Image (cartoon, rainbow, N blue to C red):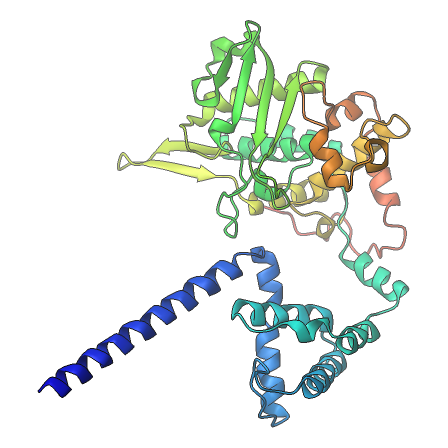
Amino acid sequence: MCVIISFLFSFFCFISFTRSLFIVKDRTTALIRKSITSNTARGYGSSWNNWISFLSEKQLRANKYLVGVPIEEQRRLLVFFIDCMNHQNKDPNRIVGGLRHEFLVNCQSVSIFADPAVKAALRGCSADGRSKSMKKMAKLRAPTPYVFIEWIRSEYWRDDPVRAMTYLGIMIQYTFLLRPCEVAYDSDTRMQHTIMSEDVAFTNHFGLNINSWEVTRELHSSIVEVAIIVRSTKVDKSGRGFLLFVSRGNQYEQMLIKDLLDWCAMANLSRGDMFFSRNRMNMQGLVINKKLTRHMISTALKAAAVHHNLPQQWFSAHCQRIGGATDLKQLLVGEGQFLSKEVGNWNTEESAKLYQRSSSRDINSLVAVNAGKNLSLDDIKRMFPFAEHRTSKNQITSAK
């Protein structure tokens, strides 16, 4: 009897220990997977399937994580894999990067990926500079010119709050060079980087800060400045975030402040809402929160492209960041507005930016518009001298 009890106790201890190991493995895997962005994870998605198919098709019985395989064999196997992927017109660098990450996620050794022979094989598969340039040119996105934003405002900034929200998100993107996920809902980041209602403050002429959900139309004339804090970005490793300011420095900034105030009055925001979202009550008495999305931004841009007789495939939700930076660059040429790392003897440009703090004296892209140095439609066309203009205004499908 004692033997049976002892056996059962040992068995249950073994089961409990095994279960704990699985829990640890699952949590470890989940944590390491979070180390890369969702876009990168999607790009890596097919890597593991390619690797398993390769081992199966070549009838190789090596462990899929190369455990117990001599280093020489690991080297030959990976180089052979790289060569096969290259002959299938797949990107070996991306696939091997994904494979390495899969090894890492499962806590396996990744030292073979740093092997000189493996690195040499990857370099041997790389296209020449001209081929890379031609490939990138085909996927190149155009900067959003300010004339697009003016047209979107004239069409969208009316009685429909959803369309008004779309225009304003695009305008803020252009003004402060923001990524789409910082103004719009993204199913991948799930508002991790998005500006929330509590991240926007309006300052009146008495120096008092007013929350976005407290704004009324009676306050419009007293507001002199708007501060926006972006608390999280894809590249912010310090966790500091950064501040953005709009003051009444010129007619374009004055218009933006007015639009922001009008938006707060019509959006019916509450603390915890996305700033670019709108609350309304449905027929059942439930509050529905409509959020700005990348698709809404992209659709508006494509509609603007159609109106201005430009190919809509040139424009996506990321183009305001490019357009704002391009216009701002024209204003900063030769003026030394941002110090390089050499000037302050910092190790990196990242460190240089950390030392150059944000203030209400910072300029934005609307200053370039006010100075007449923003992009024109002709400037956009000249950026694509080798593009094939196969479409006309009548042939382009109108964006809804």
